[in-house]
Length: 290
Image 1 (spheres, rainbow, N blue to C red):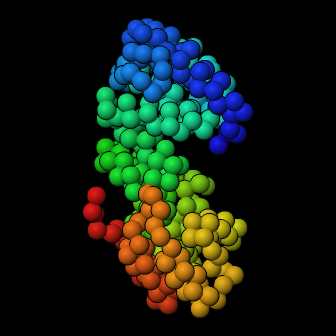
Image 2: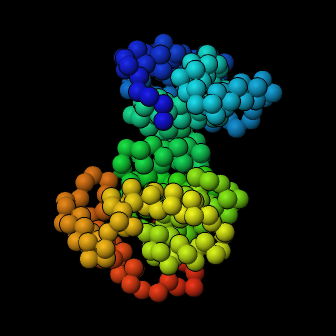
């Protein structure tokens, strides 16, 4: 993520008031009924029809985003006419990339309310992950998945959110699906290894290695990801030490967006036991409770 703006007030002015127009299609910048970002109603255009000139504009924005030039991309985007949903989606995404999460959330919610597209649900879910609202993120990403079940990015982000919530078995299923849909993309592979490790320990990762031909370096990266998510390193702790750490974590009060304490305790108990149980033949899909 790009570095935070030095002067937040200037950033909000550029992303909000100065670019707001009071007309609809054909206006410059994202149209809204009033100038302030947190007041009024966005005039969202849900059209998914992109004209040749739109494609050229959006390709240039995408190129800047791929180069991590988020501030430049945002400035260029706000000089365009917001004639399609794609313009709005990129604007909301870029607001999040420059650390204006509240404003990104507001725009994504407006797009969801008006268009209810899987792209908007996905974007809003990612914002909630970044804001540590994990349970809401899971709900939004599950809705996005129901509309686009073969979208690798959605399944990857849903799997990551599920890991954040301690639902490692469901996370493993979503991330295995994302890995295959993305044909082995590196970021998805790292999340997948982390989910298998948290769900079944070293035995699960060894089995996964046999199935998809992982290198030791890739496994190490996945285990580091697991350690960060769980708040400890299993490689550097004995079983008894791990048990004590997990028990201490379970006694901590639940924070906003996390699981309630009884569920946390149950999850941690299952995680401790997983290191003593044989790994099943495959990690299957858990019960669909969405």
